[in-house]
Image (cartoon, rainbow, N blue to C red):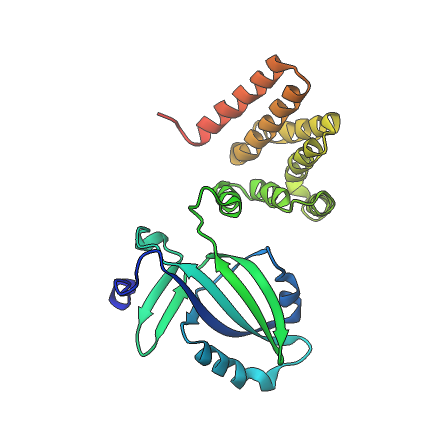
Length: 261
């Protein structure tokens, strides 16, 4: 289907474009869309190159707005990259009656700006190039996607919050609501305490995580994270022998997950 409906040759590589999408979403969702935050969608996201067409859709929906449901005009900026193979491109350009852009499931966007005008929220998004190694957001997102277990993803999400108070609250909720994932709480809190330079507390949390997962084949990725943190703790304490021991353990377990030639 893609190949039959796509013709990107008429668009220059490296060109930057803006597309538009009118949509109804809840006020609670809008409140979460603050500048510099990341957003992704669990479905294909269609947008038009015509702002007027998107606004026309918004105008038709105005009669249905209330305190809970609001009207949003997404203004989406992205750059054409012909070098990416089709199967990993986060966007698809479709030529039909009018030009349309279809963003694939899981595409990652950064919120640039949010304004409100004439009963319409205008939210500017920029498509994040997930393969840009120089982009901190893209690098963190790739790290999150590369983790295999749910527990490891939970630890990564807590780390990406970049706010100690929020991270601690987040890990506490994991422990309270998901008792079987307490190891994620321990590993995450260990890294949090390490960042706070509370090395003894960090070590205590990470040893708990290691005891939970050292014989668990399904959570080796969490074990690697904990071993790395313990190695870093010993390095800060200038115990290089112990640091090397735990870095070696992390390497050995990591190689068992992804064999190295």
